[in-house]
Every structure is written in C-alpha cells, then in structure tokens.
Image 1: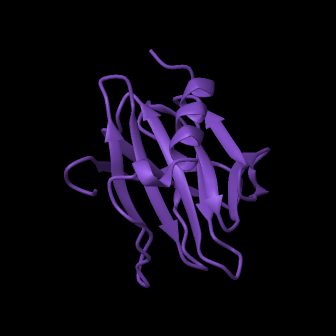
Image 2: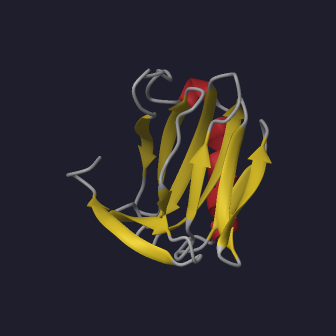
Image 3: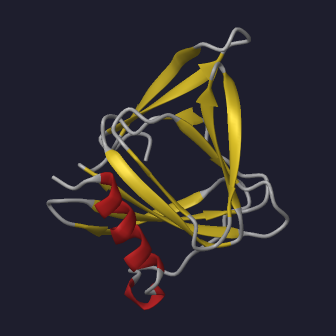
Length: 150
C-alpha cells in the first residue's frame, strides 16, 4: 500500500515528464477536463486542466489516499477548519498529500489556465460530495461512482 507521501512523489514525477502523458492536456470551456494517464495495481494518475473559475465541489476520495501537484497556473485548495473554509493558494510545483478521509475543494481563482497531476491509491471507486452548512457542519450532498460519474 502506498503512503500519501509516496503518492505525491508519483504525481510530481508525472508532472515533471509531460512526454510520458498518454494525452495532451485539453481545456474545456464548460467544465474541468480530466483524463487518467496511468494505472498500476498500486495507484492511478490523473491529468486535470482548469480554466479560470472552474472548481470541484467539496469532496472526499471514497477512502483513497492521494497526492496532487500543480504543473502550471495557480490553484486554490480549500479545507474545512473549525466549521469554515480555509484557503491555500498552490503555485506551480506546490503539492498536497492526503489520507483516505480528506475533504477539500480545488479551484482556479486566478486569471490563467492551470494544469495539475493527481495520484490515488487505491484507484477511485467513489467520491462523496459535501455541502458546508451555515453552522459549519459537512453534510453529504451525493456520492458519485466510477464508471457512472466519470
């Protein structure tokens, strides 16, 4: 089993070698673009692109651990702390690692397109989306399943 620090290392290795990506990044004006660029029995790696204003909902990774790194542009990661969202900007080369119960939202709040590489173990089977209530409580909004939602 991979540790989240190992997953961040894998994401950084792929981020540093665009020639190894199985597809070229694309930018979709309507929603984030994503494509799985590698899969092994130990982990999977995804390439994501973000136009300004594109974001995820608050979500977890269905029990998977992970790591991601920013290739270009700037992303903002928000996590819940004491019932409120805490934002952290991530410039090119910055990365995050996380365990299986991590909830966050990632956004491109900047003026330029962004690219990121994400690594998960085990592979994503589901992702739970959350709403943050006015009183600071996370509530399940829905559960997305691999093969159906992505």
